[in-house]
Amino acid sequence: MKDRVISEARKRMGQSLENNQHEFNTIRTGRASVALLDNIFIDYYGTRTLIKHAANISVPEPRMILISPFDPKLLKEIETQIIKSDLGINPTNDGKVIRLAIPPLNEERRLELVRLVKKVAEDGKVAIRNIRRDANDEFKKMETGGDITKDDLVHSQKEVQDITDEFIEKVNKALEQKEKEIMEV
Image (cartoon, rainbow, N blue to C red; front, side, top):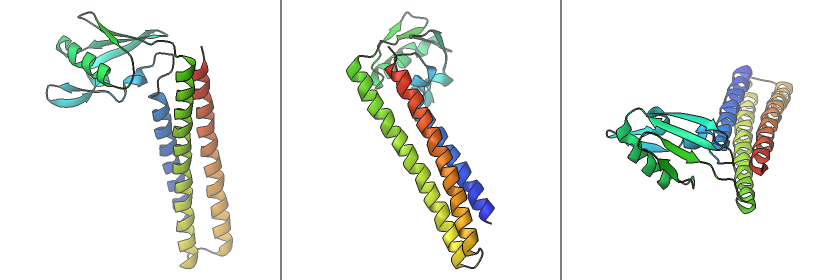
């Protein structure tokens, strides 16, 4: 029973870490990444569709993203949605493909992005700590119900704390990596 709670906590923390990493990937740095387009949808014949499902996206150069729609009629729609997004990048449409030139970041924007990734990381850590709290509450209920002993409760809480520390450290490492990426000139 307690093993189920521990494995469930580990699984939920893993999902939280993945969500955190996905958030990091959608934050623009001075480098081109197809993940920048992960949250941009287009109207694909009446259906709300992610750009990546309607076009080939590649990174031919470190500061360039190339979008080749499966249907050339979608060029204008893709261009419009990129302009409407908060990427702050102006697309270039040559009638066949859309090019996104990633401009280098100025110092002020870099610091703003670092603050943003720190907030994303803190939100991720809070989510992981909430999972720890849920697991510990579950253990306390088990002890009150007589399913586990006081020693089992202490041991289980320590095990969940160790897992929490492991995932918090992974978030910190991802944060450190993203900050380094943002501050690169």
